[in-house]
Image (cartoon, rainbow, N blue to C red; front, side):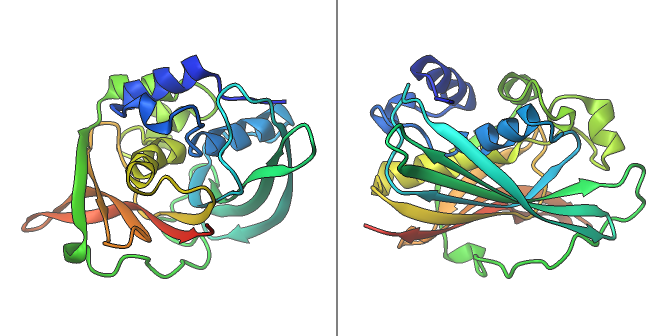
Length: 250
């Protein structure tokens, strides 16, 4: 059984610069990304070095803080790609009446050690956001090593150890996928407070522990993006780090 304790949610969201009271006793669904990964670790499936590519969340009803839930899951596929292995896992959370409350499915890349390939992780889904200029900016945040290490301190050292991150091909530690989703989910929750929804989350570019990020959304709140500045030959350009496609089921 697992649960998200009130104190834990408050601590982690406050660290990220997000108002914990926004969820009014509900669990931020983003937490179940990390919980699903750790459930695999507890079953002997290492998360070390793995990079999130696609995460889906389906909330059938909002989990409550301190509510015990049974976590179950399976590895659906393992595909060899140029950079290593592309792994698909399905995880679901049920209450004590055996009703599924939330599903968290994931596709991740397990890079081969010392791989020189910079591309080649399998089929790349089409972008959700095609015109950044059409989005409305909602909020912005400055990440720091202290914030990122405080959020991610175990399980996958590319999120908090510089040597591990560089060995994985990154200039510095990157935030965990779930941490980035907190920023998108907070804005979605503040405006929509959905009773039921599905979302697909695409991790397009790594977000480093010293990046500045901004949350932007379209008018319907069916597409949200976590954006960052990327250096170019002529200066810098705003690019999508993480994007989220939302389907409402109310």
